[in-house]
Length: 353
Image (cartoon, rainbow, N blue to C red; front, top):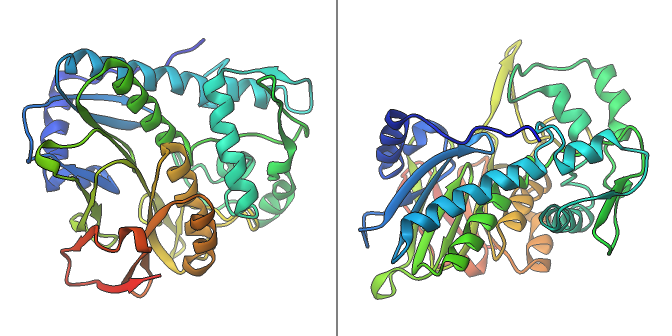
């Protein structure tokens, strides 16, 4: 199996660690970042996987070993679920689309199962078979506006019902034109893998950030909550801070990846029903959930659905959200009502939904 490198230079690690511990973290494009000043003394480790820098701070006996184990767990997960990795489970399912059921790792099966539940519950606003369209836009490498006729021809291939999971741990894509891309769930799943490693290692507490997802494990000293800064969509500064004691947070925002062509700006959050960037009433949405993979999938689904249509979906999965609208209004679901502190005067805290 082809492996992806997860090491960075000592200089990169030193610079990135300093950035992530302060407000300069958003210069790296982070949608969420951690305020770790309180309860110091932890072991910090920075690595690279999933196309993102991974920042961990782990506390307690065996912290350094636990951080290394979590880093390895994330890399192992990437080698299972990235379509870019030769012989990964996802690459194999894509290559064998239209063919026989394939044996896949239990981690991959669980992630696909979670993702498929969100696909179904969102009515396809989230769809992990978006690959034929997402590859066409190529936001990660050379983003460009595809031909309308090409989008139209590939759109029928986007159909999550073509993914079949069996209780024996196998999976298959029934249509030969189908392909999976777990980019909208992978970073949250990576946080799940890291937190599982912390639990196994028996450390006191830890926090991990992977791209737009954050996972926290254990309580801070004296009952303090973890402080997670939410990015201002308009600047490289903080919009405010979410205080959480457990769980996972993931953000999907139109500012994260975008390009401008012929005077029109296109963002990377594609609507599976049209093949184009979602015409959402939101600038971003941050979702809290008990699972990293679930929070990641839900944040994408909620962005595509928009504020009002997201609420039943969040309730179904016992999750909470912070919505930032195009009108610069901030709305919170009831579970986060007292958890957010606004620091930007350019936005208004409009209340709960």
